[in-house]
Length: 345
Image (tube, rainbow, N blue to C red; front, side, top):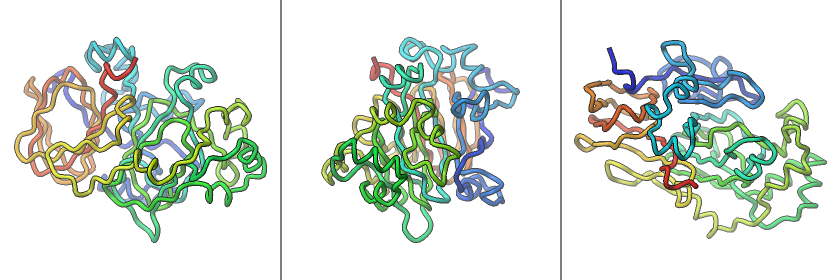
């Protein structure tokens, strides 16, 4: 029997979404199903519900408890004392597997300050994408406006639902596995068809969708009830030229080493992600973490004597109280963690 805070394998957790996708998730997990049977997002180690819902989105543990409730019952054991001091009983993190079976709409997310004011939340929704696979003719992403735009222009596009103008105004960046894109709160963006990512986010579901027609039932779902006039106050309308864009994009496909930091500078205030590929036994410090096994097979051992075999497609949550761990084997893992407590004030 495992210790109370041993690492735990997690089942797929795919709440219903408004867009198509999911076959890449099924393939990674070794399941046979169509995209319509699964879903484009798998919320991994989630204490977050879909916006306005009671439980959809939450991770359920094998013992029947929501992970959210387990963490609240023992935040220090799950998260560590320093994390609890900084973030209370929130993990500070939401991880998703996201398989875009169609292009996502143009949208953006609120900053922390905006979320506190309008959504009574300590967290906004900064996010990052780790591209782990692509398919189709032209996989690409759309981060930020190419040139600075006036609020009047954007108001007109939203009112008219002028999708061609919205898309044309965004940067269009082809991607392949190993590319990572950091998306600060407020940055307009979309993910194109055929892009499969491990996505890190702050633990909220606040999406302000300016391209709502053909995706959402009503404009109210686009602005989450606060009105587009208010929502657009947190939109980054500044231009992101190629030099500026390079500050949020990394190309890590050829990176070597047992531990590779995957995300752009500046993202550490919100979350951390690294690729683990041990050349021999790899020691890992105590930390709350979500693990996604991308390839191969290996073993995770804890200082308390727990030992888990790992294989491609598995997802796990590791509590802080698991202590120091050791990873070995011919395995590739993406490790997702909240920010170090000292990185947030």
